[in-house]
Image 1 (cartoon, rainbow, N blue to C red):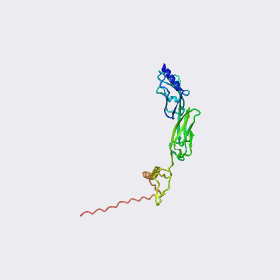
Image 2 (cartoon, rainbow, N blue to C red):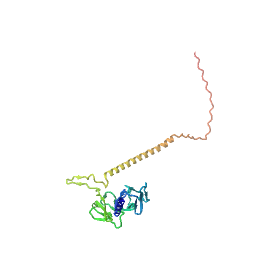
Image 3 (cartoon, one colour):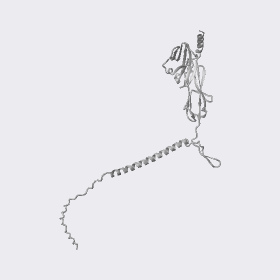
Length: 293
């Protein structure tokens, strides 16, 4: 009996304190209820939506039908774990333990620069700090590396070297101030070309190996040269194949004509009178050979 009374007293004190939990999009967050056990019933709500309902002695908990309920589960008996957090998940959560309510606030913070990564001097960029789940009247602002406070969305037009450093996104909730950091890296543009320098003795000094030619690195020019060489080789190959094809076309008709039979010649037949037949002459008698003596 004393333990139940003590548990109720603890819950009444804890329920009066709202706990704030911060996270980022696409992460997994665990919201602790505030107590480690329950006697009969444990329920988790987000605003007015039921997420999980567990009764003591029941094998499986019943879950709500919302998107955040499908991504939620109970961990360590009373804690609520949400996977793949979205900005829409932010808000007030309530852990109901045996009829007592413990309130929690989930804040989803996103700090980003567009474009991401290193910023080039002279380019344009946008720094944004977005916090969902805040109560009305809360403020969100950036603090620049030089300590000056600006709005939660900053347009850098253009980007300068002074913009490099740690940008701090500060926001307040229920009288407390929170912060998220974003490190901004700025790189200067490399010179596109540099003229040859002349020393005092009159000798010319060639540019350093890091100097770019027409704004392109040396490996880009190698790729361009190889590509041009491939195009030339392909062009020569096409011309050679075309000429061979023409020769074959000329040779094929000759071979075809050589295999055809020759047409008989047609002679002119004139209408002349037939020549008279010569009379046959008798054979001459041969002289008898002389008898041998």
